[in-house]
Amino acid sequence: MEYGSILMLAIGLVICLFGYRVKKVTFFLIWFFLGVFLTYYLLPFINTLYPTIASESLYQTLLPLIGGLLLSLLGFSLEKICVSGICFFATLLFTIHHFGIESPSIFIGALIGIILGVLAVRLMKPATIIATAIIGAYIMVFTLFSLFTKIPQSFFLPVIISVATIGTLIQFLTTKRLS
Image (spheres, rainbow, N blue to C red):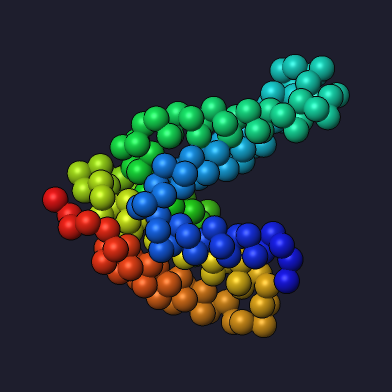
């Protein structure tokens, strides 16, 4: 087993079981990685606008890190938008992963994501607990399924739901009573 896989399992476990308690760090990391991926996606456009950046490997490495840092600082400081955005993007990623990129499924996934995002703002603590449990479960199960390739892919969703349910219950039981 690789050290990276062990680290991802540990991160997933902490987020799944203690996500509300470490929500600032969790939100920071989620927005950081989202910013890195977004900047990687935008790099070809940046490279055509500024050809000198395209020729420097240092810029190719630093720009995604800077983009991740900027987006994580923004998400970190705007907690309600952060929770809403996490719910929206998690729903969209779930839709893409399980139903593909076809227009109807993306539209329905985005609509459900918007509804869940609005609900998340109204119910911050429960939404944070549920979102972090799902994200942590996804990280753990994805890592386990990539390590143990003989597990049938049909078990992926039921295992995520089971682990997320356990994580949600543990978080609700270990945090102070909801107000």
